[in-house]
Length: 209
Image (cartoon, rainbow, N blue to C red):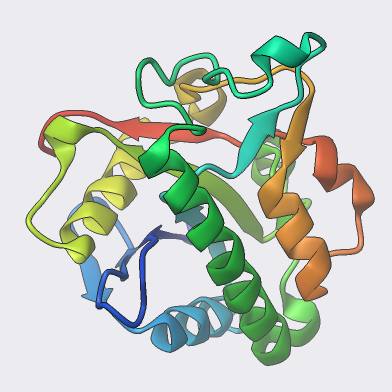
């Protein structure tokens, strides 16, 4: 795909310096940073300049609402032993919730009507939206030495899967509750309530990229 910029965010405590991002114009052409403000401003700038953006967060963005209440905290299909409901997953989920809302609010303020977010790859590829939201899953053997390293690994994993993102989707859930959809609604970035029940593409980065 032409004219696409991939952004990836390694979610973590801003105060403790555990936040990092990567902007990838191609697999090799990347820039990095640790400021959440610079991230939001950079995404908004890309959108205002007519670029199409794929923005990924390394935290659980949707969870399953199972029929059987005994399975309500069960791992999503594809997570293995790194369940969203385990300690590390819960921490990333709750941190990601507030940081996603902050980022989306800032993008909305800066980009105005230029931001049209979607979770569905086919819609994005067909030109229905210019801001594709995806989930990054950086496994243990792919972890780098810093938060920007992890964000870079996630962004490059996304690039390596283009354009077949639906086939590359590694994690699924029946009857999903979209946390990132709720964040978009709360921030005013979207008014589409159908986002609440839509999963997103999850790209797993395994091994060193």
